[in-house]
Image (tube, rainbow, N blue to C red; front, side, top):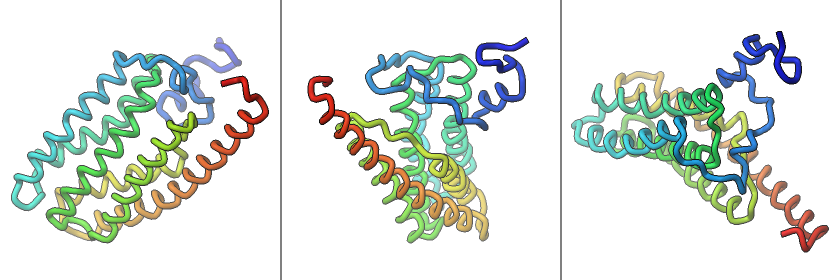
Length: 222
């Protein structure tokens, strides 16, 4: 038995989409600019809990003495893992929202910034690599804000999604071990994130140019 579009409702293709392995489908309409925020959804609740947990993580980690705290590391892992959980819940429940589209990348950026600040303070990871990652996160936030002001949605590219996990993984591991693995993961994530930002900026520039051309062609459409 097949659903709309000839896709089996419980087939491999649907499972890959639910797990986030297949992101070829168009962006859900509910997440696009101009749609209602719909703040009270199950996925957004996860985002709010992640956001509230970040200052708790900072207090625990910064008062640990050396940055290597099991409680701080586990809390950081939970905050980072929530990035996947809220997306999974949105796909399973169909509760997509504009608020979720805006909230999720902000929480991800803050999670990396908070973890990076702890690792910087205790010198758990190479500071030069942390500096590149932290500057990149600030630039990404600035680009997203610029896009919103220009009525352009800047979607996270696949390289940006890939970069998040080695960076967050490096921060987590740096809080539980002292060897070559965390710095290596950070450098890999740093390189991916820099390339992702270049693509992100180029995509934003092209989208803004397209929006200007559309406005010039239809000056009374706004």
